[in-house]
Length: 285
Image (cartoon, rainbow, N blue to C red; front, side):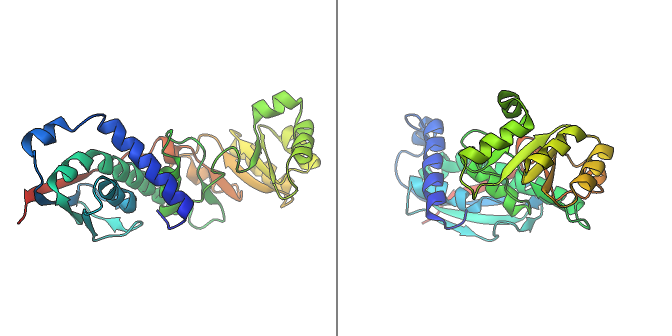
């Protein structure tokens, strides 16, 4: 994570919640085999190649349990790592190493998987102007970590939450009665510094969004032909975003459209974890 104090405070609270989920009363297995303090060390080993991400969260999980824990990192977030590489060494109370292991790895594996998948999709977009965005389709209580992982992988964050920006989707438009009415209501309610984004599903809605003065037009689940026509129609009068069924398989055709952005929920809801493991735990004097 970066050093922004708000993010650090939010991350700490979420990590504590995750630890409480895993240790509701005690770690009965660890307490059975290690009833008293003994110093030990364990190695973080990469079992799969990819982009490492979440090392700060991994380390913080252990230091929350015991501030005396030492985490030596041999890589930094965003580095590409290979199967078999030694990524870090954790030294401290063996009881802390055992009790914090699963939670620390859950964060690191999930975040590294997202960063790895994002990096692959970003590379598919090389050679065109279109930039890759994430969405709010994140795991509950994991958004701060998952969106950070997208950035580490080379993607760009869309709005963080509902307080962060105006995005008039189909149901908002249905509630307002029309694209025009929804944009008008948003303009009247929101501060002038807020941009208004509108989700559209066909070329008629594109025309209406343009006439209503939308700042950003999201082309949702439209054909490549219609998206290409929409970008030509918009002609720079609004920022363009493509959304809907955006995956590694569909990127090659989407990149030809020439939109400013493409957003993909798959970055956070479908990225597989990266396999990492804590190995070789042993006591030290």
